[in-house]
Each structure stands twice: as structure tokens, then as C-alpha cells.
Amino acid sequence: MKVLIGDIGGTKTILRLVEINKNNHYETIKQIKYSSQEYQTFSYMIEKFLDGFAIDKICIAIAGPINNNSCKLTNLNWHIKGDELAQEFHCQEAYLLNDFAAVSYGIINLKESELFTLQEGEKNNNSPIAVIGAGTGLGQSFLIPEKNKYRVFATEGGHSDFSPKNELEWQLLKYLKNKFGWERISAERVISGQGIVAIYQFLRDTKFAPESEEISSQIKQWEQGDNTIDPGEIIGQSALTKSDILTTQTMTMFLDAYAGEIGNFALKILPYGGIYIAGGIITKILPLVQDSDFVNTFLHKGRMKPLLEKMPLKVVTNTEVALQGLLYYESIALSI
Image 1 (cartoon, helix red, strand yellow):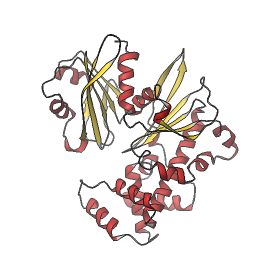
Image 2 (cartoon, one colour):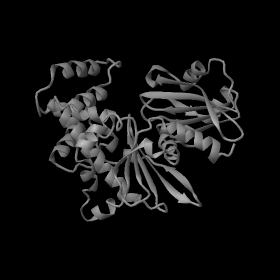
Image 3 (cartoon, rainbow, N blue to C red):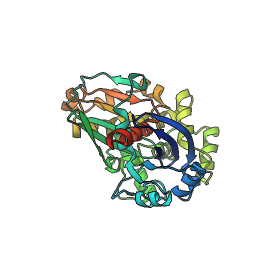
Image 4 (tube, rainbow, N blue to C red):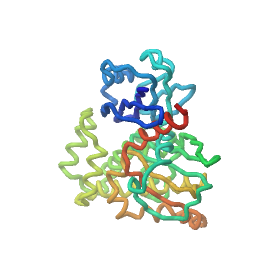
């Protein structure tokens, strides 16, 4: 059985064609990464990828809410309907999953070598597991143990309100409201790739520190519409060298907000089964996480700190965990 699986994000999309046998073993036939913004429709991307291959099923992870096997993406101008995909590509079925639901399925079978531990905690296998990750947006999901398996629940928690913890974050909130004319700022507007850029612009525009000519030139090119530039990547890589005050402070604020939001999410579901940090950003800046007050900020919840100290806190270093989750969903959960 040939199955097309894919992980659609606002920035990039990974498509993989696999052959799954009756023993649920699979072999990858081909895999390609695409720039999502370069395609007007997902169907055209699939057509280019398949290049004549016939498929039996489609299983796609999407960065957005799924309703009746349909999704209008949050950070991409695509509206995807599973039933229409199945009909268009002459396959039995096409399933759509929230991208962090797919990540949740993926972490079930991760090896310890695919994880980096920030806090050991005291793992309880009978408790929920939390999954959170910043990329183009901010994904959040959780798993509940049930009869030696897990039930996965996707959320849109990244769109809850951004909650400032200090004076600088209050100033950032005010800046973003004034700049965009929005009545509210979601957590995703700060804790994401777009958030990294927003924090940098705030610090630059409020004269926190002088701006590097090299960084300034690249950011201005992007602000003028050069989509070949990834400003979040530039800022993050600069901060790794600790040679620029603005980019270093940008990533410090980003990580403080990120850790605080993880703590908020943890208090809501008490995931003593573990907290897994995924997404496209965390692995690229892991040295910054290690050198920061990330864990202490996560724990900074007053009287609730002893609860958070019991929760294992791990970074997912497997960047294709969503694809692994789709394979698990397709071959195990659907019992091919």
C-alpha cells in the first residue's frame, strides 16, 4: 500500500511517499521539502511531488484547526479538504490531522537519543503528556493514557492571550498593539518565528541598543518584501554568537516568553507524564536554551513551583517527528 504523508507548515512542507506492508513495516520511496509560500494550492504541490505515482491513501498534518476533515490554514492561504484530495488523486481515503496531533503521535515512539532533557522530573505513566512547540506559529496538544494507549487531543492554545510577566514584556505588548492596531495579542504573535522578528523590531524601534549594520540591512530587505530572507533565522543565528546586543536580547525575551507559556500550559493539564518541546525553532537554538534561565522561568509559578518540578521537560530533537506520528496514526491507529 502506497501512502502519501506530509507535514504542512506556514513556511515549509515536507512530503514523503511510503510503502506500507501487511506487517505495518514501511519503506520510504521518496521525500522532498518545499517552500509552502511558493505554491498557490496544495494540490499542485502534490501533483508535482507524485510525478505519476499512484497512491492508495493520503495522511497529512496541517498547522491549523481540523473540522470535518477540512482545514483553512492559519498562516497560509490554503483551504484543504480531505474528501476532495481523495477524489482528485483517486485514492481510498485522505485524512487531515492537526500538526501537533501528529507530533503527539510521533513522541509516543521516540528514542531517548531523539530527546534532550532539560529537567528529569518524576515521570508518571498514568498522567497526561503535554506537547508544545514554536515554529511559524505556536502549537499545543496533549495526550491522555487510556487502556495501554494514548488518546491525542489537538488544541489552539497558541492563540490564547499573551501574558506579560515584567515591564519590558508589558512595553512589547503595548508596542505590538499600537503597531498593528490589534485589541489583543496572542501568545503566538510573540512565541514563534514571527514573534522573534516582532521582538527584534520592538527593541530596535525603542532604541534598546544600537543596531548592527549587517543585521539591519537584512531585516530591512525582508521588511521591503524580500521573501528569500528568513529574519528569524538571522536573528537566532546571530544570538548564538552573542556578538550583538539586540539579537541576544531578542532571543532572551523570546525564551523567557516561551518558558513562561510552557509553564502556563503545564498548570492547565498537569502533565506528569512529561512535557515535550517540539517545533522548528527549539533545536536550532538549543545552546541558547541551555545557557538561559529557561527552566527557572518555566518553574517560576509561585506556590505551584513544586508541581512543575515533578514534570519531565524534554526537547524533541527529531525534526521529522510529525511524519513519524503520521506513520503511527496510519499504520497503528487505523489498523491497516
